[in-house]
Length: 304
Image 1 (cartoon, rainbow, N blue to C red):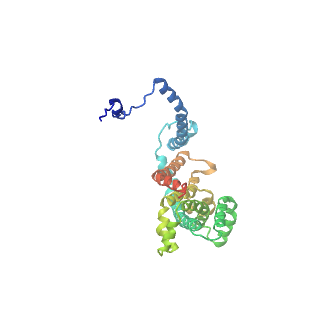
Image 2 (image 1 turned 30 degrees about the vertical axis):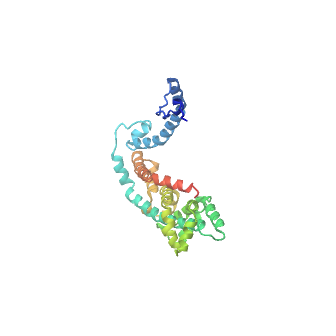
Image 3 (image 1 turned 120 degrees about the vertical axis):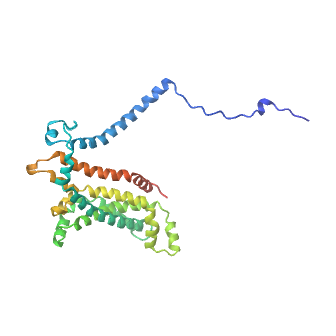
């Protein structure tokens, strides 16, 4: 018995080639209208972000007379590039930047090491009272720094260490630890505890597990925490002004006050030039480490 195949039913259907969707002029117009609020928002955010930098740069190239007699957003009548040289010399920026680094780097090292170790202990190790200890660190975030300035000043004065870098380093370390411990505990919470238990079974001590496993796995998180604390310490004025003591210990933020002359007169051009030097240096550092910061923030937002 022979069967015949219907050519209509046996035909092989090949998929059609992808045809891009084309909008009619009316659809394209409506689509463009819907995107207008988005573009307006982006333009607004761009202006809010870029305009202060633009305003700061153009005013750093003006003379005092030009700054006071013309609108602040206007371009300089004469471009005074020497304001940057005056700023570097008058503000003694080389010394103030060095002092800021001397205070910031040891503080960051202590904050990162102690904060990461505390986060490791509170999330990886199992012991009674670790939740209460974490709450104590969180309470430290809510204490205003102004409340402890006077007691600390009296304590450092009695110890005879008020005219040195040590008080600033100790205060910055203590002030940075609560937030760092909270952030590092959040990051360690995303790591399976079984990894450290396996290392313990293999004979690794807690210290070795921390430095060989925990710390390397937290590389992006450590960079994120370090950058956040760096900005907080670098931009601080209150602690540096009160505990800096001698003029030779002035940090960069205190050094900017040197541009106020007698009777409160301010040399605006060099002042804005000094602000540009410090601001763009920090901005370049942030842009260079931006991807690391984003990875670190994402790592703390995911539960493993």
